[in-house]
Length: 153
Image (cartoon, rainbow, N blue to C red):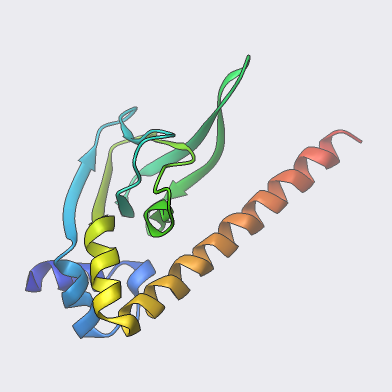
């Protein structure tokens, strides 16, 4: 676990996190690999993890009735994917598909929730970090929408 904690601290999402919290998180972490076009998860499935992307790119997609899949955003090396495990009903809202081979840390959501209940300082630190990611994604969405509306004029 010590090696995994050392690797976790190098991921931008966990930068500056206290060593004791990194070691605690290492107990919830596992290495994961996905081939190009492999799904990390699908919309409607139980949300049970976060993914810290180490290498590769992942498309966030949504199914649009009558039109098929639409790619909303891309999550890349150094970014985090997935926080639906934080809030009931613990279901994914999108599909996540590897665009190329992906290496990631998979953080087990059930384990994280239990550890956050045990250590509220850790829980607060994680929620701050995830909330910042929500902010970043909303900003990206706003910029995409501005581009769409600009293209219509």
